[in-house]
Amino acid sequence: MNKSIRTFYSSHLNKILDYMVLTLSENIEDAYLLYVQDGRDYLELGGLEDAVQDLVSANPELANHLVLVLIHPGDSIERWESFSRTGAFFHQYLRFMNDEFIPEFERNLGVSVSRRGLLGDSLAGNISLNIALEKPESWTHLLLQSPAISDGDIQKVEEVDFAGWNVLQTVGTYEDEFVSSISDQKLLILTRNRKLYRSFTTKNINVQYIETEDEHLWKVWERDLPRALDFFCWDWSTAPMKEV
Image 1 (cartoon, one colour):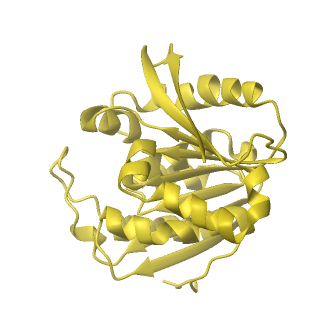
Image 2 (tube, one colour; image 1 turned 180 degrees about the horizontal axis):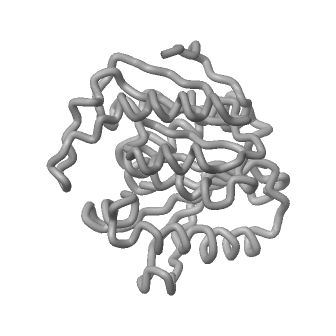
């Protein structure tokens, strides 16, 4: 696997962010481009590298297509301020991604992009959703692992017209009990994910919604990651959709 560590200066955030690009070939064509929020955590806690290696070992042709861009916002406070709708840098982070980072990265990539997706856990799932909501016509896939969404984020989904997305949304049945270490509040993750799923079903969206008997933990997202990557590459899920 080729790993390239790079930096990007954002005028909207007024700081330099580190990011990493993962590829498995020097000859990328017709890119399947996946932007990963909480990128460092997906490497260190989520088993991302092993999951990608296993995926490509089983499907070698993906090596010439798959490009992963791993972005990390900073420490836990910077993450909250950037990824939460109530955070001080939320709107600046959206402008950083959509107006600065993504256009420049893809110009430099220099190949056509046939699939463009976002992957995120918890609040990283929330910012992934909101990045896509800003320019819904630009995205083909959203991989949302226990997204920590608010009622305001759900309302935004209801207000946007969609050209068609493929969404994999997973959540644990015990996640309403999760309390944020930053806000010291329950985020009602299960309840709000059920609302989000119902909103998705009213739109022109192919959504696979999956509930498991799990808590809000990295070991759960690590276990689920191969399914998410399969969904991004092949548009199918190995687990049945659970209606709620």
